[in-house]
Image 1 (cartoon, rainbow, N blue to C red):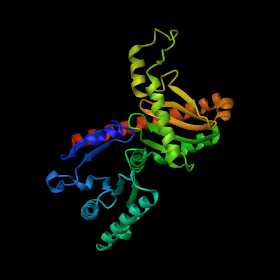
Image 2: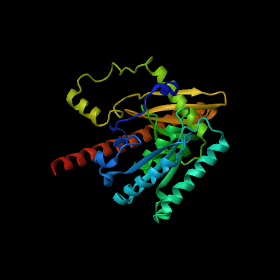
Image 3: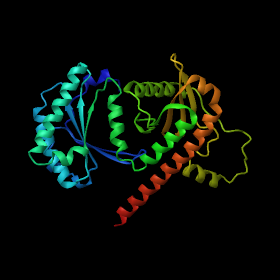
Image 4: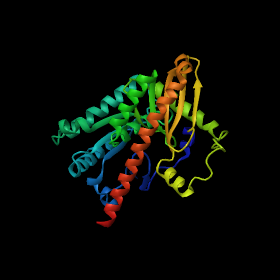
Length: 316
């Protein structure tokens, strides 16, 4: 949905549960601000992350009072809960007013928690994000929320660090194609505009993706056992592709944005100097193949782990 079309959406008045089968298995509880948590019967001890949205263009005094009460209940049930505060609708504010707003909200939240002696205890678990639907800040914020839940994140980050160092890559992101969330990036510091350029490039790649389709070589051995082939593709669907999707865009700034399909719904996006990309494309593609194999193994292992946990819960 385009951002401009959200003007016609009605306020959310009902709670909803969304099960998300992605790189990180998630169950999202979408709860309107007026909802009574007691009536919903939510087990807060199972809560990994609390995301609370504050309207920056409204009087948020009442919202912050409600936030204090929810934080207290969530922390009492789970001392390790992550608390993410989205200061939303900042698109209409000046840069100076944005900073003043988030500074004021931080101060009020801190003062409220200090009354219960929890400010210093909860400070490491509190994060604040300036968000808007009119840019990609909301995607960046949710990406950082999900990353905290990914146990495999350090391994993949290290993998991307090595890949960038050995391939002359300026910046790399591992995106989920459908949601546009990124699950990992290398350690190189980048500003918000870099992330926005990568998301825009991913949108462009998708617009053209339906024009092309890879056809396996007709020389493929027809006598291969079909059941064995199907089983292999089920376990590692990307490893069995001879040529996973790849594409690149050359920008006027002499930077090339390149895309490689890593898994069914995982895309590696990298920013590279165009002359480096032209000279070492084969070497970069070769390095990507190792990144792909490693990430596919991690993803499939995580899926098997989740299936095993689900089976264990079902039989208990």
